[in-house]
Amino acid sequence: MLAAQTELAGHLGARFVAVAHQRNPITAIVRDDSDFEGPADLQGSRAARWSMPWFAQEYAGALSHMGLDPPAMVDSADPDAQLECGEIDVIPTWVDMTLNHVDKGYAVRPIALDIETYSTGLLAADRLPLELVTRVRDAFVAGYQLQLERPELGIAAFRRRFPDISEQHIRDSWSLFEPYAFDGGMPGAMRADRWKTTIEHTAATHGLSPFPPERVYRPELLAAGNLAGRVFASA
Image 1 (cartoon, rainbow, N blue to C red):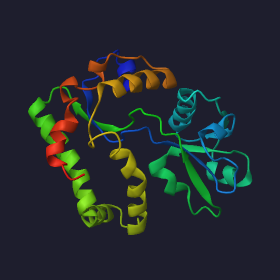
Image 2: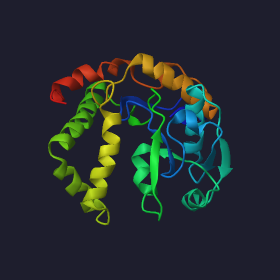
Image 3: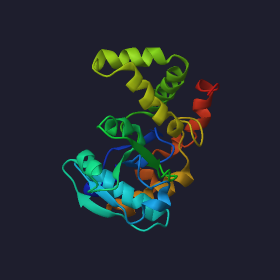
Image 4: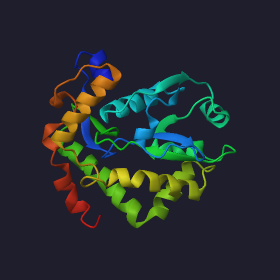
């Protein structure tokens, strides 16, 4: 979002109307037999800069946000193989994607950095009326509720589209995502203070322009958690 706003000098015609992750899900995947236990242990470790360099930037930015020393970045074409043979110490990724690095022939585990910034969410075009955007936002929130109450519906829908993905894989992936969606307020909720931290952090991490909040999210939807609470009362 900030990258697009930077490229278009603030004229991108879309803004956030809800957030998916209430905390930043950036995670370090390490070998299970490594000595790394928590974020402080990761200082100076060799981290893969792989096909999605955004993850490497997010990882380095999160360590900096925590006041920790930066990692040593290693360009990597096959981070799983390099982690196995000891050429790197960390694969930066999102916690939701941990399962993509399991079953590679050796055991791994995630170390979450858990910084309190937003990362992903629901965007809407500025041309859309608030009433319509609010309805879509409420449907987005209601989907979380339904996934909690009747997970078999979401699993069935997912497998119709991706039949090669097992039900257990889907359940495990949701279990990794769920704490991030439900932490710090109702799912979808947006807070001005956390947005301020997020904008400053993201701009610094990726070398982007720190746009004013009203160009990043719709301020009138900051009370999303209160509205969503009527739908999500049992969460």
